[in-house]
Length: 353
Ligand code: G3P
Ligand code: MG
Image (cartoon, rainbow, N blue to C red; front, side, top):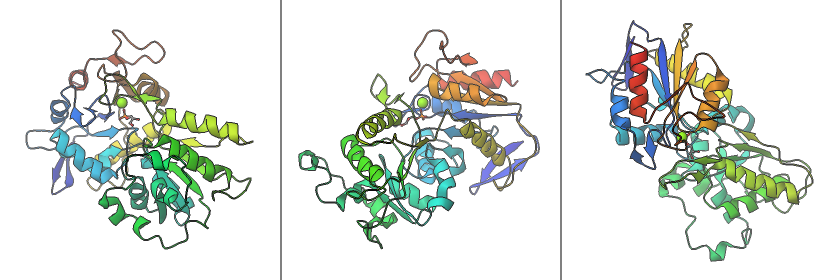
């Protein structure tokens, strides 16, 4: 089964591969915006000479902050292969499954990039970024005058979201849910305003017993960015928010975290890899993969997740990110440990014959 992209379409030849691959991004494929571990070369091996995809693969990242379509173009550019948006699963991708519940409700979204654009593109009609939301409440952040940076989003966000012209009164409507879409930029402001929203029933300054829903795209304590050692991730932000909220409020914070290592992320990846084998990407096939490879750098997230997901997942741990050990990880040992993603792909192709 070969998948060939012609005019942004996949065309199939009947010889279905019995395996697929899920690549983690940060610490495996990229560090910041720089490809690592010979990732462009590794990915090229999954295509034939005419640029047709031979092996179904996708990116399974806990990162995010921009819509999947934009991430796919960015990745295509950085890695030199043609990546379809369906091949990009970000931490916040499952938020679209909450559309029925909050489609017409006021929701706030925070994190680096364009969190409100992400939510608007999923179909949420009243998504507003926490930056914009906070700006409607005078003095809500007493530290604002001391912050030297600007909170203005790039014009792309302003053009594409409802934010430029809210057609409702932000200061009198209750927020029904708060979404941490990507790593928060201004922790102190976000913790302050989220606590305000969460303990007031969705309207800062009011009183209510009902806590609005709180969703996190992922729960990574640390991840590999450009700096030589790990950086604090969304899980660290969640701990900070939760600890403070639980000290100032009589009821503990109720929340849901998405992303790896949750088993549903791996189920969803399997179903997308199956869809990739169909020309129109829509219907599922009844056949199952014999092996699905998860290549990751974070034992507690990528390897734990693949292990929990069970058959047909097979985990490969690289040494280009969070994990730098000589042998295997003690608590979450991978099925195979390699130095780089290039080595991981070489191992898979040899194993699959
Ligand atoms: O912020 C990104 C980080 O949480 C992890 O990304 O690609 O390693 O799952 P990734
Ligand atoms: Mg990673």
